[in-house]
Amino acid sequence: MTVNKIVTGVLSYGMSGRVFHTPFIANNDRFELRAVVERSTKNAHVDYPSIISYDRVDDLLADKEIELVIVNTPNDTHVAFAKQALLAGKHVLIEKPFAPTVAEAKELFDLGRKVGKFVLPYHNRRFDSDFNSLKSVLESNKLGGPVELHLRFDRYRAEIGQKVFKETKRPAAGILFDLGSHLLDQVISLFGKPISAVKRTSIHRKDSEVDDFATLLLTFDQGLTVFITVSMLVLESQYSFLLHGTNGTFVKNRTDVQENQLLAGVSPIDDHYGEENDDALGLLTYLEHDNLISEHIKALKGDYMQLFDAVYDQIRNHKAYFVTEEQIYWQLEILEQPSLC
Image (cartoon, rainbow, N blue to C red; front, side):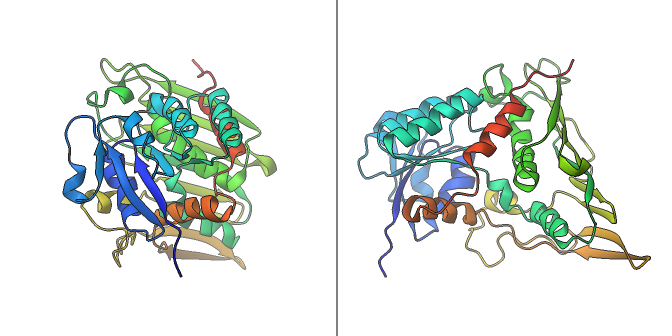
């Protein structure tokens, strides 16, 4: 059976292009990787000898063969480039953060409808192995009703980074938009829209212009409270997932290996891609008939290829995408609200 491939272009061949996008497009037989944009140094041909390397975004968007454009440029350019791609007649897959504001996100979705093209948010962390361990524990009901959930994304980078768009005061800069958007999307995918949200950001690194610590306090129906924390100044990482329910507790570190594997050049179609290390187990403790049970939970494989399969199914088969327009609005309403002093 002949596959109607989606011819794809990627707007940047930096880290995200090399690691999170081109390996999946190139190794998925339902896509064709046609082109990237490389403004100065040309590296893509080393990995993909037949690829077209355009000097400018305008040149890639003028390529009539390209049907899907991946917008993986600096955060504050996502909206402008996505609009440009839509007006050029392309579907768009937009890296997180999707947009700096709800109003700009609505502009993109409305424009997509107007020109008859799909506007798709890129939220790959829904396919992390560690997050899916949390999801499977919730679905098992062994913990009873969820009471308190903590999610963390920690790094230690005391020095100001070299990526100017991440370290200077501009729309969608700072750790909350950068890393917090991942965790917020995960929470929304599990529990829907929060009843209330409190945001707190702060700056601690010398000469930093953007937040390097942030926390969100979210409340949901049935009394669930969720705490999201992201920090650039955690030397000893804490549990990334800590869930207390009415009948037990689940804890797990951030153990998904996909990013590290991709950085090391492991193909996403390798047999061992996405497999957590044998010792990367979550611990589930719960009561069963008044007996205390402890189980070590090994996660299923992480698999970002599922995201690209979902992109294909939306574009070719009109199957509903896993991130909805409403979920993006809920997320951005929280991210863009003022921080508590």
